[in-house]
Image (cartoon, rainbow, N blue to C red; front, top):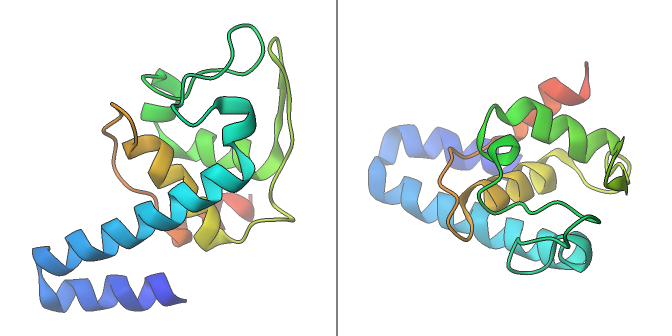
Length: 124
């Protein structure tokens, strides 16, 4: 809900407010990442070779955000092992924040993700 209010306010306030809101989202995303993801994907986003994939410079992370959101929501089982799903542990705001963080942290530069995007993916 907070993000929706922020986004509505951004339409009225302009670019400087967007930078502040984006910073808040990144800060929250970093906190979620450090608490839930860094143990496997490492704080520097480099992962552990042959065990947990790197998130930094990863085309999957930088591409269409819907598969990234779906992976975080539902987990993934593949060649590198199993990632748990977070849909029952993290809300749409937290998932939007962490996806935005991994898409913009380190050397990554991809657009932010909104809670509305997470909610739409969650319902599919």
